[in-house]
Image 1: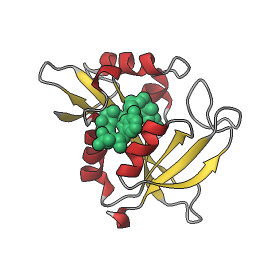
Image 2: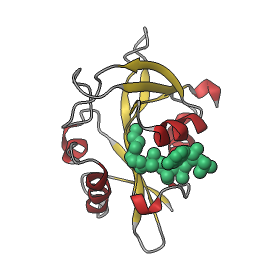
Image 3: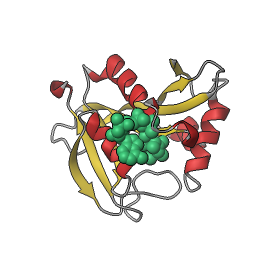
Length: 161
Ligand SMILES: CC(C)(COP(=O)(O)OP(=O)(O)OC[C@H]1O[C@@H](n2cnc3c(N)ncnc32)[C@H](O)[C@@H]1OP(=O)(O)O)[C@@H](O)C(=O)NCCC(=O)NCCS
């Protein structure tokens, strides 16, 4: 079951944090709740027992690689609990985002160039690799630092749907 939640007040936020922290020991989950400046929104997939299997955090942002600096939907984080992977949860999250906002907005994200699973997932959902950005990731926030791991900037145009 897919649901939109408020990250700052949802009873599911603790479950999201657990999924997040099991995957990333170098990015602070609180960053998404308190510091992302453009009001992040969140979609979860949960099972019949109210267990969260995965989440997607997104917000409106600026496409900084676009000359016109257009508004886009930006995916800040997408994560599926390790025990729930390869069951379509990641796809369900992206499909839900698309059904709500994807037909009227381009959607963008950064992904580590080493993350084959995520790159394949995004490619399946019609995202295209726009540019490689070397030393993109910052350990604490997962956002740009100019020092960390390399990333691809991927984008899906609403026109391609
Ligand atoms: C990437 C991630 C979100 C995928 O979630 P998921 O629920 O397992 O993905 P789905 O089951 O919906 O898979 C959809 C498609 O993605 C691709 N895919 C997903 N996981 C894959 C893997 N481990 N290897 C290869 N392809 C993979 C496949 O094309 C798959 O379709 P298929 O099952 O028909 O072959 C999940 O592995 C995850 O949370 N990883 C850790 C966090 C992360 O890397 N997030 C992305 C940050 S940008």
